[in-house]
Length: 85
Image (cartoon, rainbow, N blue to C red; front, side, top):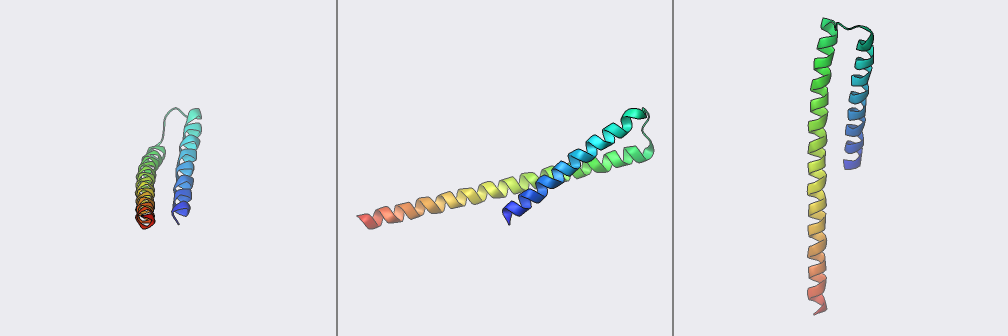
């Protein structure tokens, strides 16, 4: 399920970046952004921030899980080494 979350978050980030680039292209023709453009840009910035926070949390959880797995593997090796004696 962690991979599914990571894939979902990656898709959200890509979508957010695509939206930002689309807004940039749309504003290239018109030099004065409208109120709606400013509002959309603000909402997009909030969405980008939320996506970045979610990705950071997912990365942290993944790192913690890997650490726990490494610790369990080390404990198992220690246990096996003690049995060999």
